[in-house]
Image 1 (cartoon, protein in one colour):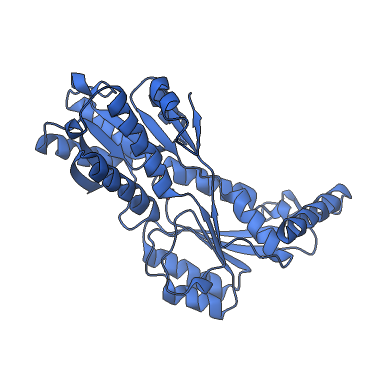
Image 2: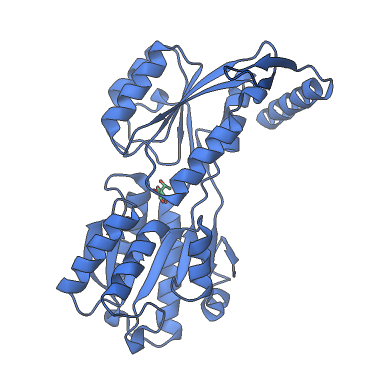
Length: 347
Ligand code: GYE
């Protein structure tokens, strides 16, 4: 309640300041005029893990368009290019630059203790966004905001379980491969765990788990080699949409058909994210059976946290984002509707 009140007051103050026109005009290096809130220049160092997927591009865009000069922020962006070492270097640079906040989208969960201790010693709050970190001491980060990746996986596997039952397919006839994300990333860990648990519980044949690094190219390569090794694959669990695109390309290149009719030799694709319009199109035309949404628009969420910290508030340690589930199969979604605690959008 107190937190809400503090947040509300801050929003009122912001609206008041801009409403009164208390904005100064400054000129950037190209001579263009920019609005700037006077007396306020919050410096944020953002260590983004890379640019592997459409999700990531949307996430970067959300951060960049949120933390603008006009809103009183100086935003320093560093691309880690999938390497933790680069992200650690970026954090150390932010500490030297004496930024006000460090925002970290970590590539993998472990290995952050030392550098985050350095940030803590420097008195710089660290906000973790998207994937989680696994540190011994929770006080090394202020808070985290992101998705419940295992829940996303549970939605997808529940959907498959229902599909199998409604279509009177035997669970043991599900021959599934998992094209995983970046190994050690929270999104991979949660989604992989959900599939392993569901395969165990239902008796699905989980043929193989291979890393696809969340990229289209790696997934295409992995899927081609899986098709050469196994001739009974009928479901492909792709841990993001870009992998789904790559898997579809490989399946079609091998002369096979992508679709839900697995009893007639088609190969079903299950995916995550739902960011790219093409992925939603694929759900509509049956090339992707279902997508557990993963929401990348964290910019405003991180902003709300920073604004709360600015006025002395304390954000929740962990904030999970609400997400939807996309499937074009109305029978399955209707039948499972009472059992789930998440929304379904039928495109
Ligand atoms: O699902 C995938 C991206 O960590 C939630 O990373 C993120 C995942 C997302 O590469 O597309």
